[in-house]
Length: 171
Image 1 (cartoon, one colour):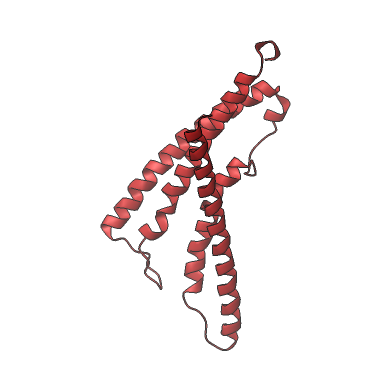
Image 2 (cartoon, rainbow, N blue to C red; image 1 turned 30 degrees about the horizontal axis):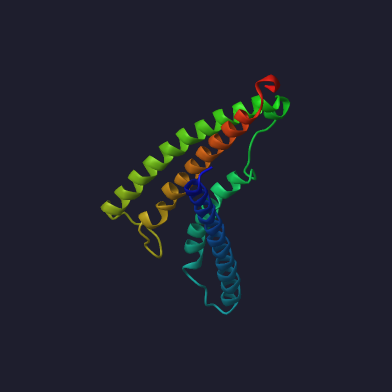
């Protein structure tokens, strides 16, 4: 791997780690606001915005760490069939699945960008207490799916490299 590719990979890993750190901070904030709200409700002073904000934060907490979980293999997956295959066939199936992931993530990324832009341009708001613009919530979808798409491409590259390293006599 070239030095430039190594730097790009390291920077992307930093982005994924930062996304997980942000998701963790959002979780801490959500726990804090819920706890404070429970206490304040006993005195008749609820935090009116906390439910709405925490619903949005929950969405962000799911989307932000998704690519890192995929990188580490900690995502939900069906492995009943792959575990019964020979290692080389497992790699080929992994390449096929990652290719499908690229296609699906690419579609969701594209439509996510279009939808977010249309909501921003149209000035569409959540009909709620805080009246938050939809685009301020929707932007995480194309960002998260772009990260997932890149991670699927990395998985394809990694699997092909591993497959090439196996001698033909052992395939």
